[in-house]
Amino acid sequence: MAKKKDHRRTKGSGSVSTDTRGYTVYRLELPPDPVTGKRRHKTFTAKDPIKARTKYLEAKRKYIATGVIESSHTPALKDWLTRWLEEFKRPNVKPRVWESYRSDCRNITNSIGAVRLADITTAHIRKLERDITSTRSSKTALNAYRRLSNALDDAVGEGLIENNVCARCDPPRVEANPTVILDVGQPIKLIEAASSASGEVKRKRGQNKWPDSPEDDAMWGLMWRLAFETGMRQGERFALTPADLVKVDDTPAIHVCHELQRYAKGAVIPSWLKAEPVAGGIWMVPPKSKKGERIVPVSKTLWNDLSAWASDHDLKSGDLIFTRKGQPLTNTVERRRWQRALESAGLPSVTIRSARHYFATQLAIAGASEDARKSIMGHVDINTTAGYTHWNVKALADITGKTAMTVEPVEK
Image (cartoon, rainbow, N blue to C red; front, side, top):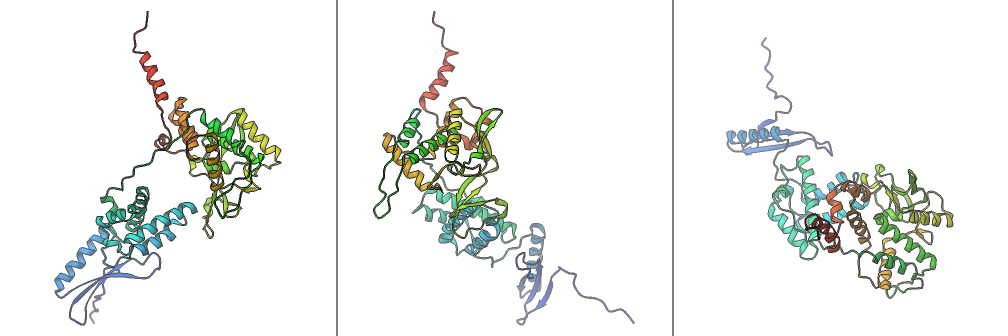
């Protein structure tokens, strides 16, 4: 007896059938959904069997070549962003970074969230920029563009779309506001004003007063000496402990190895972050980047004053040096004290962050090499350090003057 032929198709080759209308239907099997594990497929239908087969073969060829198959049923952008934030970003970024990502995604969703991934065009990207800049800054629009581009890159990786439409658009142009810094000699005036600004100062109407004492004044004076002499970030200064005051080859220095961060209630703390709770939603975490951990040499006077402060207050090696009523400092409190000191000293209004810019500028004026400046500032890229450097006319004149001396004739 002759053996019956097996007409079954090989696994993964798809199937062909005829529906109730008499149309030919080709079915292309796809890998299971990476999230749910459910089977997936794509169908190609036409009245003419040849046309149905042609569509099927073209889609199969493209899928084999790229791993992506076009679909008119891709998820809406808002749904993809929700999944992207939770699945791709929350486990891999710090909580504060995730909060900023969520804010950016909210701006995207409010503008073009209803559009399906496969339908996003350059026109949608331009609409997103217009919608945001109508009420917000161009920097906010740029952040949204970058976040959308990140999310679409991952959508390409997941096989949801073939390419990232953001690659065909120029990012929003940002005109950054220049950072104003104090002139040489002015930081001393600020520190002196801060060190003698005791007394009760009223806050806004309806809020409580916050009392200051001579000890508070001395602390802020010491804090801002640290800011101007080391360029440490705010969170790094707030996290300083006696254990961070070190000597390397008998040189007084500060080991910058952690910072304080406030996380929102319910924030997910990744296990890799190595975060330790301090108080009331404030956590001790590693620096901003790997380059953020560094050794910053300081003057012997500052090092001794910081050590004396820790000793006078019976601080243990892991205790915070700077606190207010035993609690960690916050940005709000420092900003108010900073503004008061500026007003008291009759100095122009500059941000607390400008102290870091001041330090970076003085490093450059002193002739520090690019590598040294980058290392001390805790930057990965010298271009970032350059953004913190503000050359004034006098400093530039000193440099050009030395050049002129090699050209000008010598007076006889």
